[in-house]
Image (cartoon, rainbow, N blue to C red; front, side):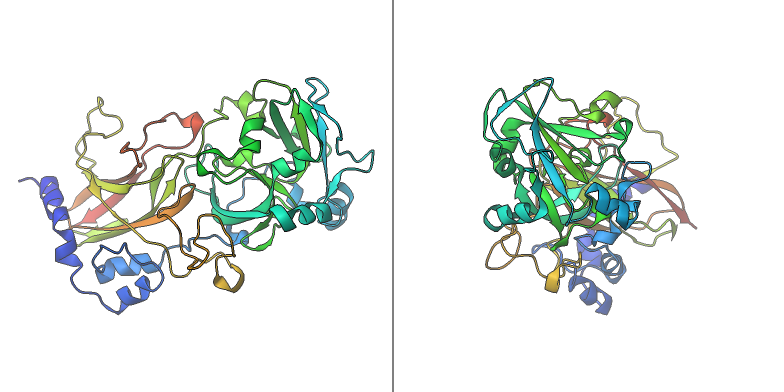
Length: 420
């Protein structure tokens, strides 16, 4: 039996060989990141890696930032933000008909007429209609999430109904402040049906003003941004200033002119977080990672170690025939992170039980989840570690939508060097 085949045989008995005893390190790790109920306790070396995992929810100041603009609007001085409506006291939203493809509405909301929606009016709508839901914010073309949060706001439809639309309304497009420079405008759009009706148990599209229970700060797109639950970040426009109701029959997103698929929802994919790059021969290898849980859900995460010296068949670019093995998907954390008020899930957060504050399902769609694996020791050499997701329909990453412009789904490869 060759070394890699031996690896996979050993992987089958890994849990019994390494997970029988739990040390103090493991106890500390499981106080924050429990394994699934059916799993045995992890070995200390894996428990240490689990203990070092990032929190489930991301503090606002820890989100990765890919903001657009020269300068980016959140970097403007306070007096300029006040002048252009980028503070809660001065923010106003215009909701108007498209001049080129007009929708029939009775009461446009405009600054000129003094009817534009202000922040106090938005909060008044929130007293009756506010919703909050967990969502991972991720970029269409970047292979890691920007952050995971609980987003709160008013469904966009409630504001659109204020204009009393009557007919010829097929889409909505919207944009935010862009430094008074038309050349910097970044626009996204949605069909009106998605805004009026929440199909497939999706949360509504919202005008968001809170993140993790706190006011949405300027760097995250405040005072108000759009958040589209199932979409990539380019649909969730920051520094919102205009919503335009249109009879246009097609998308007119800025991203659409840049060779991007503007309609695909979030994909499921896995990647690593903690991987020892230099390991001694024969030593077990603790690895951790995360999975983005896309619209198709997640049934499992799998890992595969492959010697770099052995070429893989060009006829199998997605490694479908590789001897993948299941990793352990971690359960809901006991401490959620994200600087939530009192460390608790806000009341009535969608997807969470109102009594126990625990997720109704796990893993939650449109979120992230952590995974861990302790790989058996291998002989000296250079290896590639890969991870992938299997969705709820049994389809393996990068399928069913492998093309890059509809969202990242490539299988990550991480090099591990094992020394004699």
